[in-house]
Length: 110
Image (cartoon, rainbow, N blue to C red; front, top):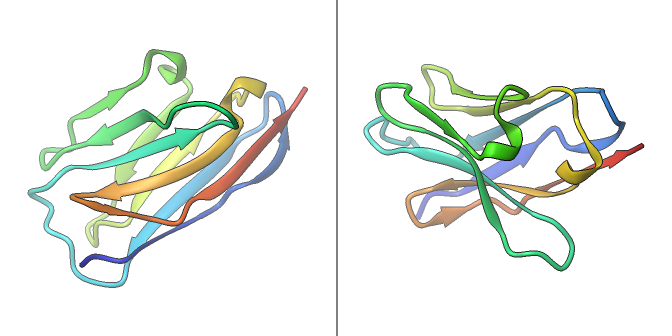
């Protein structure tokens, strides 16, 4: 089992930025994609962004142009979140294969 841990969440005002990070306690293969999900209160968990072995990326329509997903040579996963909006509020989760992190909470006020 791969153990993941997210960090970087917090309380921000609309228009501000955050960068989320996700690290693994065990080595991860770059051949496998990694992704970020989020879940707002009372809402279904949704895919926000993903990145594959060739660093090809995909984003939910709601975050295109504002969020950037990337990973470094050690496969630490990042999510740069710019121009945050109230609708971005939720718990953000890192996913690798069947493994999930415990989540990091992002709260955006207007």
